[in-house]
Image (cartoon, rainbow, N blue to C red):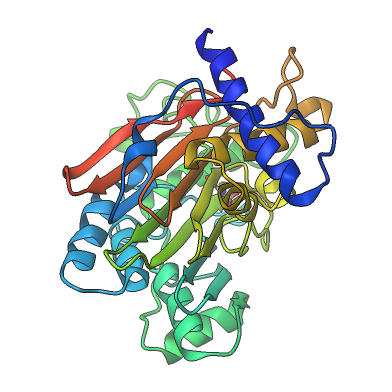
Length: 363
Ligand code: ASP
């Protein structure tokens, strides 16, 4: 069986498990016996997983869990390192802004033992939105606070308001804005007049216009079998102000069921929201899928539900990427991506945080 067939075979297994659960896939093939296993299938015991940009996050969360921390503050502490890094243009400080040049952040966190969740969306001027989401979880009866209310809540909780737009992100935004519409009043990148030390620059030599779907997800399991997870992002770059992605939506970009496992997503949030991605991954695990199969099952669901022509390639497969991450209550873990390129980070008793390629659905 070649690699693609094997992946699809595994995914069919996961979807079969889902069919047993919901009855909504009554005609789906039954779950076949597994033909191969992924490395994370066999792991048992405490573990921290994250998206591929979270190697430092898993190390930090692991350290905290080993020192006796509850997994919720541990995963939030882990992703905080990446949120505060000005060189990471996808999350927190230094994240790429919306179409008005304003950095708006989304984050969520969920705590397995209490089954309580907290989230913030479109929060501005606060560097660590996952920590604010944790305060929503700890201090309020609400699940989600958005916009100005979220910023005000954060300030009340002692978070410092600050400008999150780094010069690098602002420059990238200007490059995007200049080239957006040839008929607008902004000169295109190759037309702008430069003086002084920039005079020698070739026209348009201002660097590529970056575009990110960038996010960090982190899930942690302690020695007592308790889980927590968080997902935090600056969202889609150049988004329409007020746009909320999947990251702060409980059950879409992140979900925890302490009896089953945790899951999270990065990539095209609109696609993940429309299949309740993280919730579906946890449900698939509850009904027998391994973490990798659960991730593949979500991606298959997204592929089946993507109808818009502009979102499909010539083979009718989604032309965007989504990467799913899952951690089961016993310590098994896995990740899968729609298209090549997805990676995830793992920290367990075998050694420091390491990055692993996610299983690919469509090679
Ligand atoms: N999922 C995030 C969103 O849609 C972006 C990402 O993961 O890159 O906001």
